Length: 273
Image 1: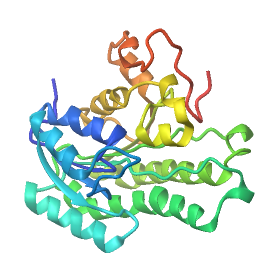
Image 2 (image 1 turned 90 degrees about the vertical axis):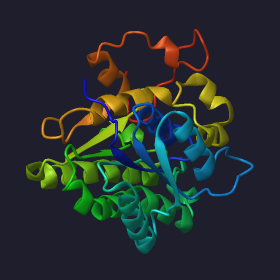
Image 3 (image 1 turned 135 degrees about the vertical axis):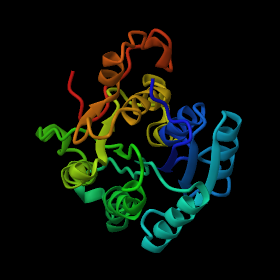
Image 4 (image 1 turned 120 degrees about the horizontal axis):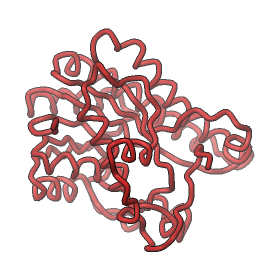
């Protein structure tokens, strides 16, 4: 069975949450992880830094390179990618996980919040993908994974937070466009989204106890692993849902991922029953 031993993953937003869970999953195979995130000093609201994540990755069996990266800064991104490739001898996988969220209606969205979502979600995905391309082209089984939703054009997904939805759908369009552009080069580009809400620190800050109604980040890590270990020329341009990926892989026990035992996890945005 294919695994990620010796592969180098550049993961944005890997200091906590889903990004860190994906990193730890790969680390157990002996992968090299570039922890590309902004948090280098502890934040009282959000646990974890690039350094604590790196320590966990190495304890799990991987190699880690913690780098302070602001995906909005072109020079910062290019320098980090070059440093990562030099340190590990290349880049095999890019996970565009970094994202900004603001679930408010148009009158309440400040310009700086709008810019933040567009800059991190859309521009950041593009800049990181562009910077990694020269190294992905040389990789044996190159993948780009974008954590963004299937494009569901029902009005209900726009009426309460149009700006956020446009930013996330733009990430998905970017994934779809890159998949078409890079198909002949054998670079897989896919999107992955959770069926239910995921209990992350950021979600708990945004919605108090919402995390107790969701699943653990490990479900996204397990689904990402299934995608990233496939042959890149055989799987690209897809919009995956975590539960569907795992069911296809033979997983039937989803209680292991539930935060609150016995609960029925809440569906995430952009997912219909």
